[in-house]
Structures are given as structure tokens and as C-alpha cells.
Image (cartoon, rainbow, N blue to C red; front, top):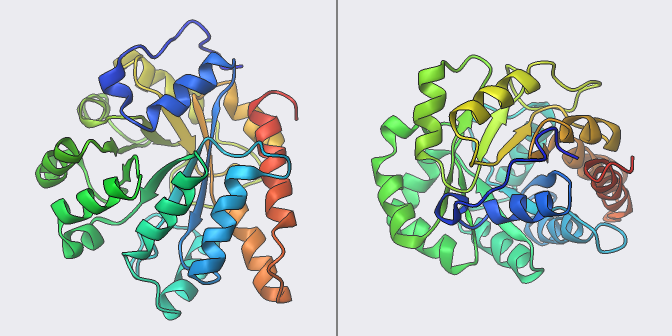
Length: 286
């Protein structure tokens, strides 16, 4: 159970669409589980199958939110595992519109879908057009790692028009003023990066996470906070679930697909088993 059991998320406007997954998890006495996979790896159909596996696990208990990653040629946040997968996806012809296919596939399972996408891709597509099409596909909102609220006027307007969540990032290096202004701009939840640097599975979770979550909660206790960068197994998920409202996992899941590629397999049993382990972790059963 979270270390903040008395906190409830009652601001419906602030929760947006994806934030309700956090509220539902809190009502069950646990943290939410957010799983990231890139669209287009090993190919678009294979990535959709993998995302549906995230929603199901082995026995129907999967992630609460799927974070659909859109491959980008110049990522600023992605670690080596995700870079390898997204580079291959780009080489195989993935396109921005494939995010919409992935969102539709996830939404069809009843699981909330967000997207992690670099802003240039949205601008190239057309900000309002992307927001419209993303909402029509059943998407909840966007995580924009290279867009700060100060430069997000077009996104603020489009997200209001189409009812989408705005999930901005804060880091241990963020000043109190930056955290406050970022949280004011968020809707749904806020993404707290618990380590400095790029993504990647690690052998232990970050000691910076509790302090960062505390700073976020002091500024905006009604906004759910998901913590990412480093979680690779259920035990680590359980540890982080004592601090955060949501546990975000990416590289460890991508590694399952990379190992499949090396062996020539399309079997998703390992991916499903990892989802099971992580789901047990956020429920305190690991």
C-alpha cells in the first residue's frame, strides 16, 4: 500500500482520463502499474500483440495504463534497450499514425492508453489534428518528455479542445518553482523521473524517489504521481509502490521483446510473466 493512504483523488477535472486509473488503484489499496512499449517493434502487428499482453498478463491481471512509445530519431530520454527497439522500428517503417492503431488496440481491452511522444512528431502531424485523432482512437493523453509547459500553448489549447491529459515531467533537479508550474499545467497525473539520466532497468530503485514524490505532494497533493526509470521486477515495484501512486516500467518489458528478436521467437510468455510479477509487486504480493 502507498505510504500516503489518507490521500484521495477527488478533483475530477484534475484526474482527467488516465488519472482515474490511479484513483481506482488507490481504492484497492495499491499503486497503479504503468507499462511502456514502443509501437513498431518487432513490427506494428507484433507491437500491438505485445501491448495487449501488457493489458492481460497471464491470468487477466495486467497493467492499469499502457504507455505507447512513438519511436523518434533523436530521443533525449531513452536508454539503450529502448533505443535499440525504436531504431529497428524506424528502420522497418513505423509511422506516427501507427500510434493511433496501438491506442485503439489498447482501448479495446478496456485499459487506458497514453502515449510517450517527442513533440516534433506532434507538430509535424499538426497539433490539433493529432489531438483530435488521438482522442478519437480512445487515447487518454500524452507524455511529452521534451515539452515544458512554458512552451506548450498549442498543446494546452488542443488538449482542452479534445479532452486529453497533459502529463509533464519533473526530476530531482527541478526547482520548487519549476515543480509548481509543471504541476499546475498537468492533468491526469505527473511523471516523476526518479533518477538523473536516461531510461533503463536497474538493479535497485532510486533513493531520490521518496524526496521527489514528497516535493510533488507538498505542491499538489490532489495530483497522482507516477515514478519511472529503473524498475525491472516485482520486488522493486513493491518498494516503489510504498512511495508513489504509480509505478512505471519500460526497459525491462522491452528487454523481453529484444530477447525474442535474438531468438527469432514471437512468444510473449516471458513478457506476460514479467507483467504478472510487476502486478503482484504493486499489490504487495511479490
